[in-house]
Image (cartoon, rainbow, N blue to C red; front, side, top):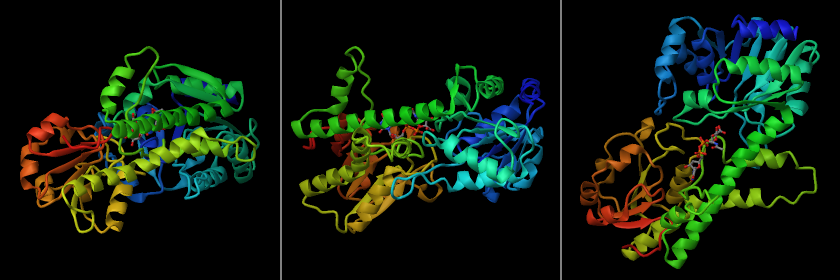
Length: 443
Ligand code: SAJ
C-alpha cells in the first residue's frame, strides 16, 4: 500500500489535506496546490474558511507572495477550504498544522491536536499517511497521536494508516520562502514512511531533507527553539549588565561577534510568538518524570519573561528623572505584535507591558500599523504623552520624524527596547533617549 501511495505522491495524483490554516498550514497548503496537487484545507474558524475561499489571505502582515498565491490556487480550484471534517474521507495524505500552545502551568495543551485527530480518525481512508507539522513535545507522536488515531479509526499503524512527524520551520515575513529554502527534518514511524514523506516534501522544498525517526524530529525542533531562547536570554542578561556598568550592549555585541565562533543574538524588550516562549516547555515536558534537574530552560524563560517588566522599570526611572511617575502618566506604546512587520500578536511582550502600565494606573495608547485596533495617526496618539515606549522594530518606525514626535509630546521621553533609533538622532530631535542595554543616564 505504501508503494502505491508513494507513486501517487510522485505523480501528484495523491489528494492532500491540511488541517489548520494558520501561519503554518495556509502557506504549505498553497505550496502544494501551486505545483498541481488537489489540496483540501480544513479550518475550524469559519470566517477564515470564507476568506480563503474568496481568494484572500487572512494573514495581513508583510508576507511576500502569499496573497497572490492564495488567489491563484483558489481560482484554479487546486485549493479549497472547509470546516467539515467529513470531507477528509478521500484524502491520501493529511498534514496536521494546528496550534500546540502551553497552558498557564507551562504544560502542553493538545486540545486542538486531539480534536483534529479524533475527527480525522473517524473518516480517514485506509492507507492514508498522517504527518504532524505542529511542534510537539518529544514522544508525543508515539504516545499521544498514534493511540488516538488507532482508537478513533479502528485501524492499525502501518496496516491501516501511516504516520510521521515533519516539524514546521516557518517564520512570519518569510512563510513561503522558508518552506522552499529551509532544510526539513523528516521523521517516519518507519524508514519506509520517511522515504514516502521525502517524495512529498521534495516537491516543495529545494533545501536538504534529513530522514530520521519521529523522536529525533520532535527533539530537533524543540531543541532548536530552546537553543534560540537560551541565546536570547544570554543577550538580555548582558544588556542588564551593560546598563549597570555604563556600557552599550549593542556596541559590545558588535565587537563580541567579531571574535571567532561567537554569534550573540539581539537583546530586546521580550520574546513573543507561538514558538520560542513555549517550545522550551514542550522539551522540558518530555523529561517531566525523570530526575533531571533542568536549570538552563527555566532560567532562560525567566530572564526573557522579565524583559517587559524591565522596560517598565526603565520607563519609571526615566519619568522619575523628569520628576514624574507612572500613575496618571500618558504613555504611548509603539508596537503590539511579537515580531517586526508581522500582524501576529500571539504572546507579544507588549501585552505584558500594557497590562503592567494599566495596573499601575498609567494611561496607555498603542500604535501599531499591523494591528487593526491600533492603527491611526501616530502623532495624534503621541500628543500630550509623557513618554513613548518602543517595543517592536517595525520598518515604518525607522522613517519616523522624531522632531515632530518630540514636539507633540508633553515630555519627549523615549524608551527604546529594540535599538530602533540611534541615540544621537533622538537627542538631536530633542528626545531624552533611554535605550535598553545602555547605561541608565539619558545622554
Ligand atoms: N528575539 C529577540 N532577539 C533575537 C531574536 C528574536 O529578542 O535576537 C525575539 C523577537 O523579537 C520575538 C521572539 O524573540 O519576540 C521570537 O522571534 P524569532 O525571530 O525567533 O521568530 P519566530 O518565533 O517567529 O521564529 C522562530 C524561528 N526559530 C528559530 O529561528 C530557531 C523560526 O525559524 C521557527 O520556524 C519558528 O520559531 C517556529 O515556527 O518554530
